[in-house]
Image 1: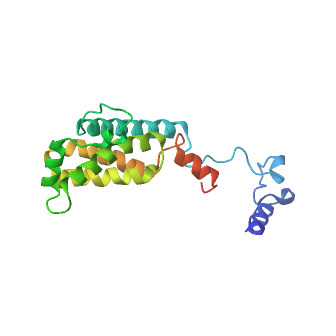
Image 2: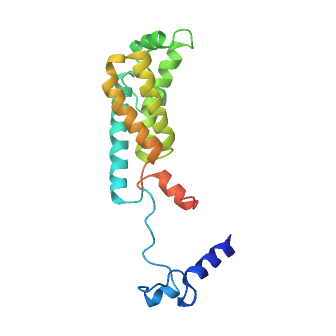
Image 3: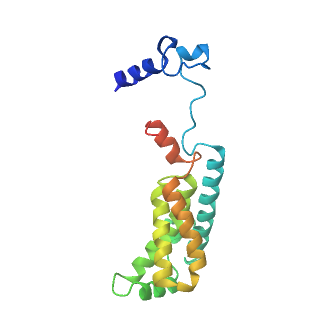
Length: 184
């Protein structure tokens, strides 16, 4: 692979007579590639701003939903209090998921992921998977739970699709991890 890159470099720039050395070529082009290097996809400042705004908006919506459907936390040090669902959510889960599983366990999972997903989104960790999950949940919400709530589900689904396709942007753990492993 290295030899292939070296031969390509030589073919383009060697001796001032390579393919890159045309009538308007700079004398330095005979021994070095053009500068600056091309920008990587998604590394612009606007990608950082948009990625952070999308993550922040979804995190705020999910956090407020989770806190509205959980019992109030009186002892902040007890981690189980953070994920204890409201009895109304458990009753609704028994209607939404009839015969699939225990309604209390489903309500616990909903509150658990509704509380943890905003933290994951804000950190920018596994954001593409989180975006895909948000998209699937928005589709499920419209089909099975509240068809009249299509407007919110459309917005959440579109933002989830954005995160699934584009990722979190440069201000995230995902971005740093991919750069450290040299995959991007």
